[in-house]
Image 1 (cartoon, one colour):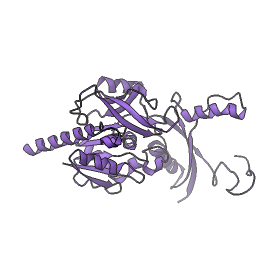
Image 2 (cartoon, each protein chain N blue to C red):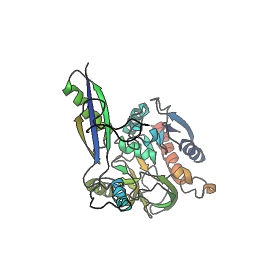
Image 3 (spheres, chains in turn blue, orange):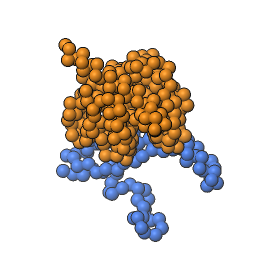
Image 4 (cartoon, each protein chain N blue to C red):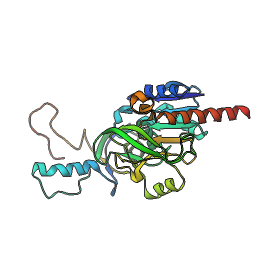
Length: 103
Length: 228
């Protein structure tokens, strides 16, 4: 069966108190950065699904996103099909300096 | 009358809960999360700790553990279930109690004594503790801020399902809610640790009153069942 790679982004629902987002905002003056507001902090899960076809794979990810990866009472999620190992690339751990192409 | 205390990987208040159960005069047993068998427990306690390291969301991975199907079935049959701290988080993620426990509003892991008011004593968990009684118990949590939508909160208040309320809200919980019960009344959860306030040596034995209520209520229910 073919593999399908997805990223699930989970964010706090609009209107939900987001203490981590607030904490980031509060730290910005320490970095002497201004002009930033409405910081919301979520989580991203990437996974490979083995399924007969894309609709079947997406159905599995929808179920996972709804039941495990997010709490529908307080969070929303978005599913994105991604190619390759990750849509977010960076230098492997231990190498010097940033690397990687466009996200 | 037997109390079963579920142990998830990362639970760390299980033996304290077992000790409190014994102080309250009942026998207890630790139940490993991977085995669905409740071993004839009349009461199930989900103890405090960091089940699965609180990974992803506190309580979410634990709520899929094999034993939780049995716990849900036990609750559906009217069996008593008490979730303490992490246990409350597991019950909320499992949908056995409404709402969610969010990151503390202050962002700090709060670890101190709190005072809660017993809001109802018509509950197996608080029978024998008069309404209005103040209990001193410790809290120790990073995600204890109780949240539910306004309609749910209103329903909880209206139906007398708020069991404990903070006098000194340590985490931003809405309506100062420290603990609630299910609609049927046999499932309850609270963020403070009654098992850590079970002996004067610990600084308070107020928490023991909840274990005594639980043990006596369950014992009476068993006896009533046996008489039928």
